[in-house]
Image (tube, rainbow, N blue to C red; front, side):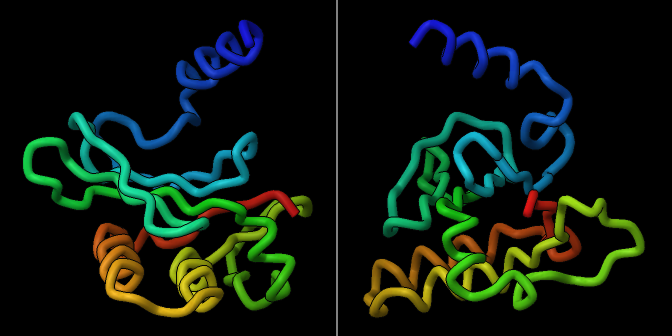
Length: 139
């Protein structure tokens, strides 16, 4: 457990860890096989929507400010990576540039719709910065 905490603390200090103070960046967490995104660096809580999606909500007014999408490789493997890949001028051989919008839609389609899931996935979509809906994922 102590080694895990040291690793997490070291990762958090890395410049590649999540969004910076003045940026909103979707990023892939390889340890957790999840995509994480927050638009604001304010105190927040999590609201689990289903086995794939967790929303980040502000403590003050429960406004959605981001999300975590879990089991990324399971989703990609189930639906074939080419469905998610987008064109890029440069992508390393061991990575693909993935469309977050497509991945979220596939996660939503895996289970029956209900008001909580519809609302949660809508909130997740609405937090995505329009030009930042792609992330590099190791394949």
